[in-house]
Length: 424
Ligand code: URA
Image 1: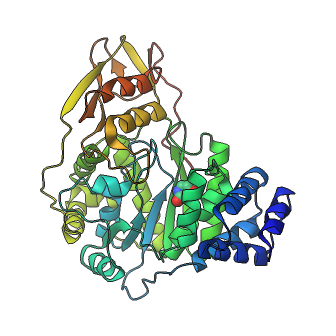
Image 2: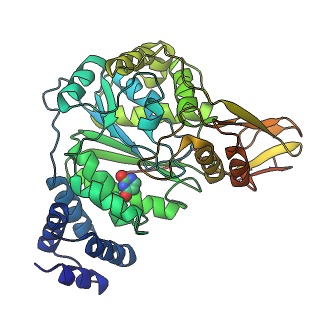
Image 3: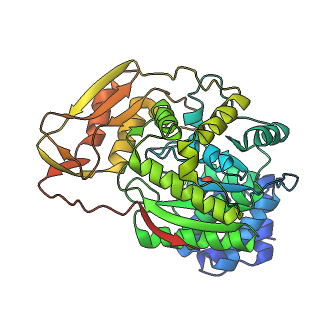
């Protein structure tokens, strides 16, 4: 097979054959196809798309480059959730132990943040002692003991995607629905979960800026999961404003613990409970209602077991940033807009995120919000608190927030509903 012929087929808007796809993914993983050739192909796919059959073949070819996990030895069904990423999206933290407390096993392989969106592993690593890297045997043992495990994907899972995602990241080829869908679903299918709920974020803080594109991504991923025998549903959810009141690693852990203790911001609680119900439904588990498990302490018990089983101290003191700055409200009225991207960028610049994969994150850095869109505010009241370890970062964070919020007379800001649509 000739890689130039594969590139030229896609450049000319042709459909790649199953054989071409199998070969190019395998040859790229083995190093026989060079990065520059794969990036030309990725760009041709970004520009000219792939049909459903090609996307399914591409996904299966990536799965075959690595191991496939299997949880059939467990005595209860498995369910997982994947979010396409957003600002203040800490939902996995309360959700995984909550679903475990309601009777399904949650084996979740998660990632780190890159750019303005946070990563679940970075958040959990702010807990003293907590370890993200587990062997498959350790993963099974945490799952059996706590009902849920959240850890890093090992190098053996869809290695083609690891290599290709890193390449896409530096060649302007991330924003392609076929490539995003196959990347996410190859890892989720290889992870071996029996059911999967996808939280596809929509808005300025998300990959997908509008509902139409988010719907197309969701539909593509649901079809890939279903065809692979994974019961898959998707929710399109709002990411035009941040989720909850905390953005930043340790700040989000603290907010998640509030939710597990039966409190926490209304939007985080609502989305956590809704996703938990979807996961339990997809897994065919009926029993305790998730709202009840947040109230009666059973979700908190599962969280404590899950954190301890991975070396973390659930009572450990979370890191705090050395410096804080208050941003005050410029006028009295209603907060009509609080842009997710602006807040995410500010948190990133304060040190909560990383510019390159190898950079460390500051666990205490981030933004705490004191008002959300729709709230009545008064001139001079604190609107947000910025947290950082280096005061020099405040100016860059303030620049990110310039124009990111508005106070006006309207009492009904134009916001996306928290849950926009369900895709099956
Ligand atoms: N997350 C992934 O895992 N892959 C993508 O392509 C985009 C987001």
